Amino acid sequence: MAPPLLTLQDVALTFGGTPLIENAELSIAPGERACLVGRNGSGKSTLLKIAAGFIEPDRGTRFVQPGATIRYLAQEPDLSAYPTTLAYVEAGLGPGDEPYRARYLLEQLGLTGEEDPRRLSGGEGRRAALAHVLAPEPDILMLDEPTNHLDLPAIEWLESELKGLRSALILISHDRRFLESLSQATVWLDRGITRRLNQGFGAFESWRDGVLEQEELEHHKLDRKLAMEADWLRYGVTARRKRNVRRLANLHTMRQQYKDHKRAVGTVSMTLAEAEQSGTLVVEADGVSKAFDGRPIVTNLSLRLLRGDRLGIVGPNGAGKTTLINLLTGNLAPDSGTVKLGANLQMVTLDQRRASLDPNATVAETLTGGRGDTVTIGGQTKHVVGYMKDFLFSPEQARTPVSVLSGGERNRLMLARALAQPSNLLVLDEPTNDLDLETLDLLQEMITDYSGTVLLVSHDRDFLDRTVGSVLVSEGEGKWVEYAGGYSDMIAQRGAGVQARAAERDARPKAAKAPPPSEASQAKRKLNFNEQHDLKTLPQRMAEMEAKIAKVQEIMADPTLYTRDPAGFQKAGAALSKLQSDLAAAEDRWLEVEMLREELGG
Image (cartoon, rainbow, N blue to C red; front, side, top):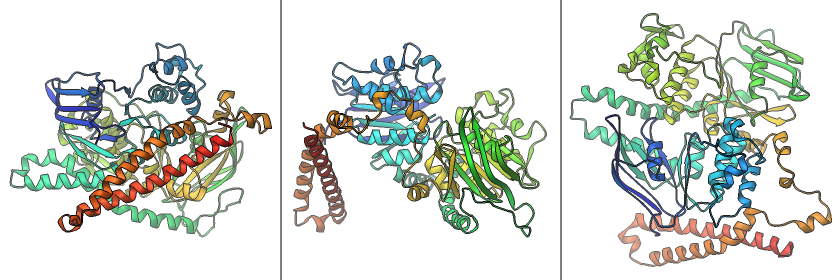
C-alpha cells in the first residue's frame, strides 16, 4: 500500500478554555476518498482546516508528502480580490496544470467566466469556488459542505465529476446520498477524539450505534444519574435513527395508497366527489398557468392533494418551485385556471429565508412566546423542557440566549418554533439547508409523525426518499409532472434526474455548445476532457488493477488459507471479484475511447 499523502497525529486544540479537539488522528492515501463526520459543533471544519494547514494545533504533528498539492474549499469562500470568476479560477492553477480546465469547469457549472465575483449569488459563488479547487486536479482535495447552495443538477454533476478524479478526497457534508456515493472510509469526530471506519458512510451509522451501545455497557456500573443528560444527546440520536429506519416500511405503504387514489397529472379535469368527508381535500389545482415576463413558470397544471399527502417538489434553481408553492397555497393568483383550497386549513410555512430569531430571548422564551413554561402541540400541553429535548436541546439550555447558539442549534430552534404552531398544512421550502445529520433525522421524524399534509421543496435526495409519497418535477417550459414515490422512484420511472434549466444551458458560452451536425463540424470533433483523461490514465490504472489481482490470487493460492482463516478467504474472494469487475469495466471504457480516437483521426 502506498504511504499516506497526509497524516495528523495526536492533534489537540482548545478554544476559549474548552478543549474542542483532544486526540485526533487523520490520514489519507493517494486516491482515497474519506468523509469526516460528527455532530454539529464537534470541530469537523476546524480539523479540516488543521489538515489544510490554515490552523496551527496546540499539540500534535502534521505531515504532508513533499510535493503533494492540496486544495481546500471553505464553507464561505472569498472571491472579492478578483475581477472575474475566470481570473479567480485561474489563480488556483499551478505551473504544470492544464489552463483549459478553468474555463471547462466554469462552463460545466453554468458560469461564463466573466461574472463579477462581488455580485454573485450564494449558489454562483459556490460554483466558482468549486471550479477553483477542481481545476488543478490536486493530490488532496478537501471539501467543506460542497453542496451548500447548489441545486440538484449541480449536486449530481459534482458527484459524477468527483468520482472521475484521481485526487484523494476528504469530505464534510450533510448530504447522506452524496456521502454514500463518494466515500470509501469514514472518520468520526466525537467528543474531541477520532475513530476510523474503513468503509463508506453507508455503513457508518450502524457501526456508530454499536460503538455507543458498547460504551454504554462499559459504563453501566457508574452512577447513571450523573451521566444521563450528557449521554441522552448521543443515545437519543441513535434511538431516533432506529425508529426512522422502521418507519420507512410505513412510507412504502403510503406510496402505494397514493397510487391507488391519485389520477394522472396533466390536463385532466379533476372534481371533488360530494360524498368525500369534509376536510379530506386540501388543494385542487385545475389547468393552472403562470408566467413572468413571458417566461412560463407553470403551464396547465392539474393537481389534487388530499389530507395526509406528502408532496416533494424538485427542479433546478430558477424553475419556479417557490412560485408553484405560492400558487398551490393561494398566496399567488394564477394567470389562468383555478386553485381550490380545502376547508379549515391552518398553514405553517418555513421558507428559505428562515424567520429571524430574537438574539436576546432565551430558548424557552422563543418557544413559548414568553408566556409560561408550556407549549401546546396538537391540542396537548407539554412542558417546554420536554419539547426542547425532542429537538436535541439539553434542559440546561432553556435559559440560554439565542445569541450564543451555534448555527445548527438555531436551525433546530426555528424548526421547533414553526412546528409548535397549530397547523394541518406544513409548507417547507428548502428546510434542509445548513442542517446537520442529526437535525435532518429529527425533521424526518417530525414529518413522519405529522398528521396533516406536507408540501416540501428540497434538493436533498435522501431526505426526499425518506419523507414524501410523490414527487412533482419540473420538465422545463412550465411543465410539471408528478411521479409516485420518492426521488429514487422518480428516476426509475423518468429515466433521469433533474436537468439544468434550459435557459441556464443556453446562457453558457458558445464554445461550450455543440456545433451543427455538418461534415465540417464532424471533422473538427475532438476528444473531450474526460475522454482525453481516460485515454491517458486508464492503461496505468489497468496495470495497477492487474498487479492487485495477481497479489490476491497469490494469497488465495495458499491451500491452507480457508482452513486457517475462513473470513480472510471470503474477504479475499470478494476483493478479487470486485477487482476483476473493475478491470473489465476499465478495459471496456479504454477500448471505447480508443476506437473513438481512431475514428476521429488520431
